[in-house]
Amino acid sequence: MGKQTFEKIKKILTVLLLVFFVLSVTATSASAAKVKGTRSYQLGYQAGAEEGYKEGHREGYKDCREYGQKGVVKKIIDPVNKVGWSKSYRTGYNAGYRDKYITGYHNGRYECLKKK
Image (cartoon, rainbow, N blue to C red):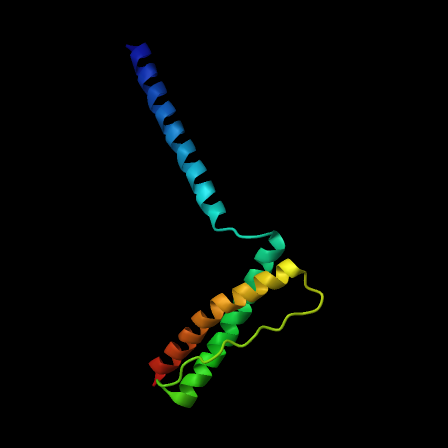
């Protein structure tokens, strides 16, 4: 009787361990899939995204106050790149800036229109 209980527990723990292993490997590969580029690129992307969002939000809010519902973004402002940045960092910065500028712009306009 005791041996049967031990075997059942052993089988259950084996199955649970196997399921846990498969889930952890799947989660690791899924999170690694969205990482793009080198560490320098990632740092640049993050910095550019923050700056792009702030600039876009400010411009969207300003356009809303000036033009109301009719004003839309005509051109994304080019980010300022510093001379000492590596090529990878600069590429990431520009990509992050462009990606988050539009989001910030729309959020700024929405915030302004909500107040009206």
